[in-house]
Amino acid sequence: MKNKRFLYLLVPAVMLIWGLIGYRIWQAVNADTELLIPSVPRRLRPAAGPTVAKQYTLSLAYSDPFRTSAVPARPSTGPRENPEQQTRRVNMMPSTAPKQTTQMPLGPVAVSVPMPVVEFLGTIENRQSRKRIVLLNINGRQASLSEHQSEQGLQIVRVFKDSVWTTYGRQHHTYSGYNRETNQ
Image (cartoon, rainbow, N blue to C red; front, side, top):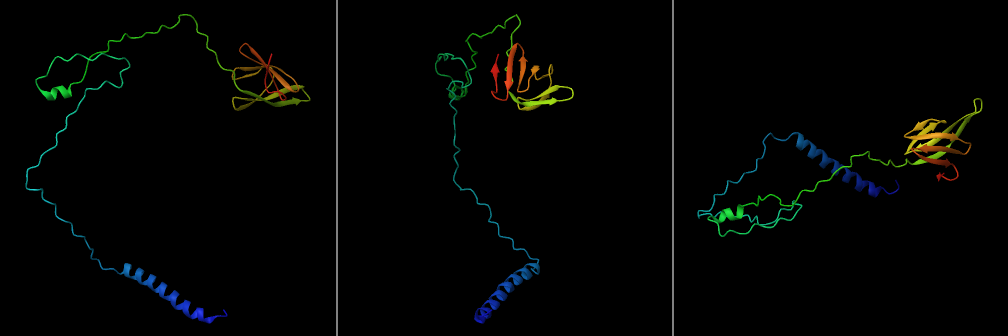
């Protein structure tokens, strides 16, 4: 170091800082066993005067938010004997709306299953046996199929070099690498 003045100032400052750190550690380790317990104030005594409790009444004169049909309100029969009964009474009147019933058809129900999402990935040909395998992505799952095999209801009818002819139920589709889907 060329400038020794800074060295003469920094060394004592560093020693002072480390000395303070060491003193705090030594003080924590060699502390007395006495614990300082803060004084807990005594409970306050209530005021000498009488206390008045607040009284609340519930007003239940609103419609049922979960009722699906409108029910006319019951006409008032006059004042009740006890006013508390009037505020606590709940309308327990049964619903007068007719119940709706649906009838199911008795014959067989045709369920339409949506066509799976199919992507043509390519073909693999075994040169010795001349057998072609098609690579398809059906609903996000890859499958390798040959002719007359099926996967998730999609049956392979015929495999060509650049396309595949499939059936799904009564629907016929051709998938190729050039155009992703054409109906025939």
